[in-house]
Amino acid sequence: MSKRDFISVHDLTAAEFTGLLALAGEVKDQPGRFSQALAGQTLGMIFQKSSTRTRVSFEVGTLQLGGHALFLSSRDIQLGRGETISDTAQVLSRYVDGLIARTFDHQDVVDLARVGSIPVINGLTDDLHPCQVMADYLTLTEELGDLAGRKIAYIGDGNNVAHSLMFGAAKAGMHIAVASPAGYEVAEKYAALARDDAAAAGTEILLTDDPAAAAAGAHAVYTDVWASMGQEEEARQRLQDFEGFQVDAELMAEAASDAIFLHCLPAHRGEEVSAEVADGSQSRIFDQVENRLHAQNAIMLWLMGGAGLDTMVN
Ligand code: CP
Ligand code: NVA
Image (tube, rainbow, N blue to C red; front, side):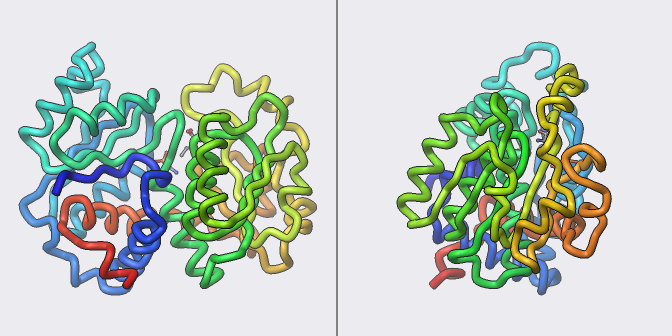
């Protein structure tokens, strides 16, 4: 069978999505069972952007599965000096058993996967952040149980996290509402795919510029930074443009009374979220952090460790 990659949640079948979450739950509950699953294997980790969670959770996760992780900053490898993605993919395919890559241009991760002969995992691009949302839907499953028919609201920038969250919602059977200011909506390319996914799953997707309408009755309210990595020069302008889009206690009051608050982190308290909400009783932000580890271990077990997902869902 040809190798699989993990580039976008959109690429997963609903059964694979559910299977990955189930496997992540098993990894979390029975860590010892998988402690040699990647014995003798090396994960290469290419980073063009900064990272705390993704880098640490993949390094620690690989170790937990008995493998070895190799951190490759683009500042230090020849990729940063102009060696092509294609050559980098072919070179690394001769040394390592899997790759995780965090790049600016989404096409770079796609090309690494296309040219490389080893599984490639998307560790965040300008367009998508699929590892993050697998951890988020694991967190939601732990909190809400069956996700079918529940509602998640995303308030803020129509960015990489928003795109992946939309894809995950349909796979999970959840309704999703995204509220963004004019000019900062999710990209139409991803909105169109998400609408197709929602139609196939029978879920609702609402794109609006009204945060209260998006949050209404939601079981989870999610936000992310207003200026992502690579947008630092726009940060000041964005502070003005996102006025009224902070997730604060008033906005949380529009959601279900037992709604949880989610954020992929890093957070800017006082901007996209009030400190009261980020650090309040509804917040599950550090559960999301921990679940990065378990969700990604499941992804590595699937792509590199020979774990099947079908058996998980049947
Ligand atoms: N949420 C997330 O991906 O964090 P890092 O940028 O620290 O990896
Ligand atoms: N949207 C953010 C997510 C960081 C994990 C960014 O791309 O910087």
